[in-house]
Image (cartoon, rainbow, N blue to C red):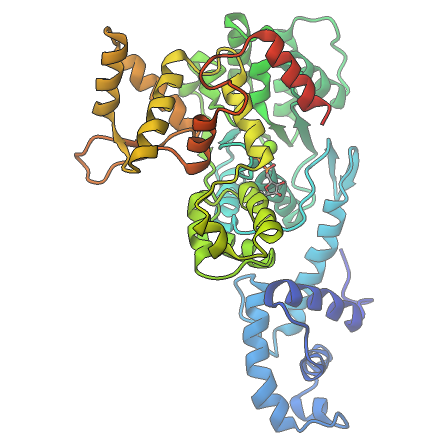
Length: 479
Ligand SMILES: Nc1ncnc2c1ncn2[C@@H]1O[C@H](COP(=O)(O)OP(=O)(O)O)[C@@H](O)[C@H]1O
Ligand SMILES: [Mg+2]
């Protein structure tokens, strides 16, 4: 993109000022604008000061140094902004900003550079933190040529937003990086068959009546032939499909084997609340990069709360209660603003835990879907919630075993271990080990504990029947 010739400094200042406001919460002063404008035009301080009403000394000593520090922080590209480098840095900022506008407008079947994009990427209003996660994933894709990346994490933790941002950054860095970017959203009623069929359509391949296994191989072949970034977002919803059983697992297995088989220029990213090994038995030996997404780092979450109008040290406590979960923090910040006049302290004094509607839905889904949680897992979760209500000290594994033995008599320890691992991977329980040799202890994050204790739909204590679940799915779909 050749932008430097026609670019007006006024446009650059507009873009820059927006950034300064977002980051520093203030606008540029008249003197700062003057220095930026003059530096852009290659003038020295004396020339800039000429007829401006400011002295060159004032601009050089009182405005310049702090301005460069502030701009280095605002632009945050790892480069120090100086008077001499300003124009180069600003040109890069503008280039990225213009590309960002293009990328964020992405509709189905849009073209960015040479990359054709399909599907609806989630819109990103403002994203906090995640820099390290994104740069790690970008490296894994670009340098280590990962063929398949699984991103797991509890609902609302920010998986979709993270991947959308990752794609945006990859395309901003090189808009010709891929031939296709395909974003496939899994709906509550989707099936693997449907997803594969949709991808086949996008690739414009003819293969209507072949069995699924063959269709999968064809999609994989296409992924080998072209450079494609394929995202399948919300994979866990596939486990809700009617015929999710043993046969399906073989098909999933075939799918994962095929998309990871040979060296690709393509990469498939799968986001899911459930670990992929719950979909296919033999998945652990495949070259898949597993990445578990946790909550936001404290400083990013603090910034998010600050911009929602919440301040003070108590915010840290809030972040801990919600484990840095951005959608939960968003929901609770809105409640605090509305019911506690923005006082985090008053909210915390109330010792209440608000569960956001998004999180509730996610838990209804985990607890409500038949076969999603085993009887034993439910029993353990209820036991943990009740124990932790009395005493917040994490519960040792041996305590859990003791309790289960008392309840059930016979017990397969390896089964308990497998079940606990699943709960951990789904972020329904948290683990702590203080010292190396110490056995693992379990905790529940406050929102999960509260949900289990109040059991709002009665899904926790008893697995709901099909009608209840169908009603619930219908309700979700009509939202
Ligand atoms: N890094 C982030 N910064 C700001 N808000 C975020 C961030 N990640 C997620 N969110 C907020 O949380 C909501 C849920 O994120 P999403 O990516 O849809 O979660 P998931 O896909 O894990 O269920 C988003 O709509 C957004 O409002
Ligand atoms: Mg999502």
